[in-house]
Image (tube, rainbow, N blue to C red; front, side, top):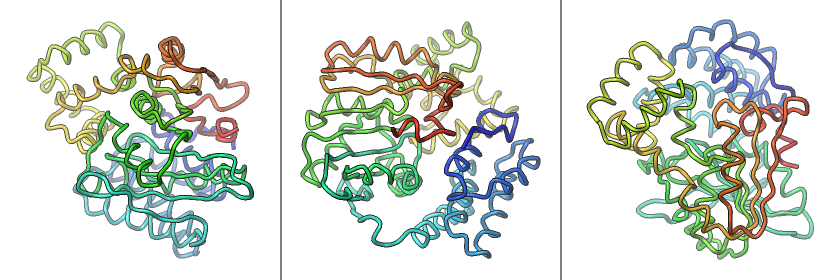
Length: 366
């Protein structure tokens, strides 16, 4: 599947391509083109309505996986507290598990703090060549990865996918995201009694997985899919360079009142920025916009990279709208003690130039 231009807004267009990248397994492309004109003017409730309509249609036609993905997209931009968000999330999971054979994977609940981390295990087909542990990033669901990663067991690797704090069910039970990702990873390794595994972090997981590798010696190889050297930069890189530096200094100087006043004014005039901040506060547990941005200053491998001694694979897309491509070089150069470092920049000419190679997932997986 090539990357398509459904909408002029970069992030909204990316979300539609996240579904299309799985082809007709997850959607009917003509249905995405059908709702695209109605989504040009962004509002979370309108986004919900159009995707929910597609989900209901897919349900009525017993297209179970399509219904699951459409419900997922319908809840994506709804703020926490909307009853429709919870209902759509539950519908997404219900239709997903109806669509997939019960023998396709095993379910586990990994004890962690006062709750559990959901995990699924797909055993290698034939002789096991190794074991891969994979996780997402900013509010991802393990079910979303199934269509993407099921080729890994087909190639002889047992795969464990888990949801950590700030993701999926743990988030919805009140478990907020942490930058100390070695803690949930260690809990998973303890539970399955694992050693010398390969860890893959997707999206913001491009920070989380290397961070875990810096403090967890049972990780033998780590892949950043894609790289995320500095998450604060990712969340601010689309504003002007001069103001970006001033804003960072204001955050680091803890000018709470100034930051909050500035962001409240911007939120009133931009629904997308309002969603980013509102949703981010929900995931992180931040009390206000200042806390939210200050929180992201901890999400950098700048101080931890020298502790990484494993084999490292770094992936990046040259037109990633979320992660500045120059972070690839900075991350690579910071890995001064890694056993080995390989990096791969995907270009427009070959496909895979977008965030996490949406449009050509096969390139990244290979």
